[in-house]
Amino acid sequence: MKDRIKQLMESQHMNQLLFSQYIGISSASLSSIFNGRTNPSLKTVDAIRKRFPNLNIDWLMFGEGQMFLDGESGEGTPTPPPTTPGEGLVDFSNASDVASPSLFDQPAERSVQNTPKMVPQIVIKEVDKPQRKITEIRIFYNDNTWETFVPKA
Image 1 (cartoon, helix red, strand yellow):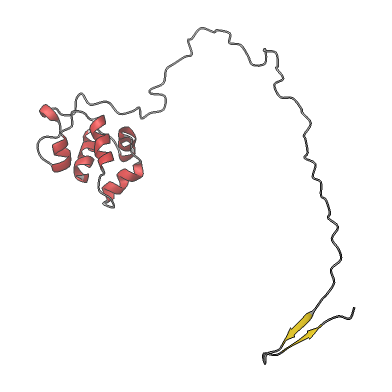
Image 2 (tube, rainbow, N blue to C red):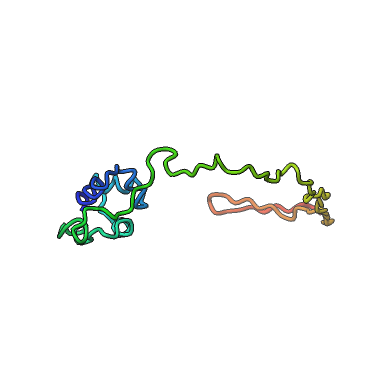
């Protein structure tokens, strides 16, 4: 199938980049197909079918029949997008000079106001806790014994 896609591309006198842009897929996808890393997906076949409505899908997918339906040689297919800079552009240089309002001619509106920033007040209350006192100290030894020390009152 990749050879038939390449044959279609050459019949339309397009290079890989132009063809991929024309059918609406990434040039990396088309390159992967031509290099044999991936097979053409349904998305690719559908994109080709949409841009070339008179293309024989049986020919594209299975190699059966003629490239174009009704023996056409590609006439009637949409033309590729412009390839030279400025080819598809409209010339507005002869347009009548109509004064358009400038942004600087309009009175400035103050839509942003400086409002004082409200800083939240954080109140920290310290709770008076009674002073702690040691009531007992225990020491454990590795021979499973321990000692307890109690302060004198």
